[in-house]
Image (cartoon, rainbow, N blue to C red; front, top):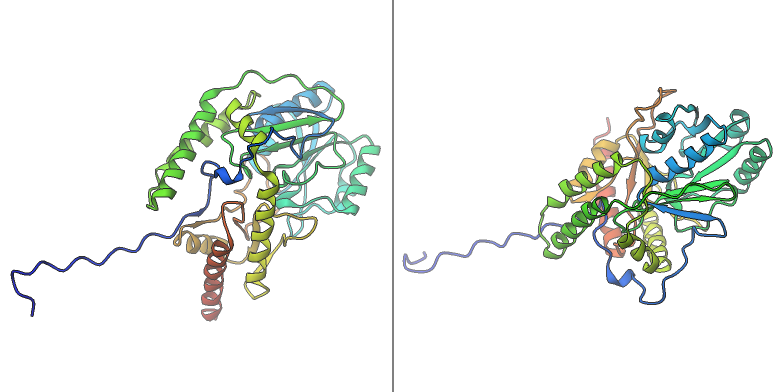
Length: 370
């Protein structure tokens, strides 16, 4: 029995919380910055490239140019988010929806049958590049007089779309920048953006730095979540095209994109192999020579329960994306999908942790199946 004068037993050390995986980017790891002369970027070509503060602003520039040229009809995938269509719906365009298949892809035959005039907003989701059949269809549409606008947000590590009159992207979705988007035109000039709004970049920079501090400290401090929400809200309301911030442009010019791409490919391949093929889910965008996933996207009957399960281990997986509120619903909204992070911030151990957590969920679900 312990003597009354002996010191009390030390409390059991509390286990450190698991490292956060996913969600918004923290500040870029110096290991992914090049000290060399600023580089050209994969989406740049001989076309005119304008840098703005968001993908929404890039689309605003393009629609403005097309509207002045007499266009007023745009075709979009039925699986589309508000931020993509807002530039058109807010400016009097007629928006026509094209159905997607189970892989969230608009099939070439559907495009051929549905798009006969106006503008096509082509959105290759989750890292997909255009197949030969799709490229042939896009060329056929252009021969008919259809203007093709390619949204490259999910595939900024790949070469530019081969068949497009305009190309746009939001850069902060896959890259650790404070703000950024681009708009490229093969011929028709676009107006120059207004000067940058430094407050927009400063808001996200503050959030990214707060997240970096929390991750380095290894503490479950979620202060950065509120900061990111405020930054995102401010950027969503800033629809008038303005130049990208100098700070983000400097980061872009020095990112080691080759290394980022290599790590992302390794992570996606490792996670896909660890998951394998089992009941309960299907990977709709497995990595391949022509597909570098933005996220590894799972189709499952239980996306919301799975998301909650992953969050309990501080693994944050987005559902891309909530139903569009700016367009009428033309069919059931795709709601069976969850996106798993595979970006440059993570390594083999992180992929193993993600896979173990995912497999545990599906094993549990299988055991409780009636």
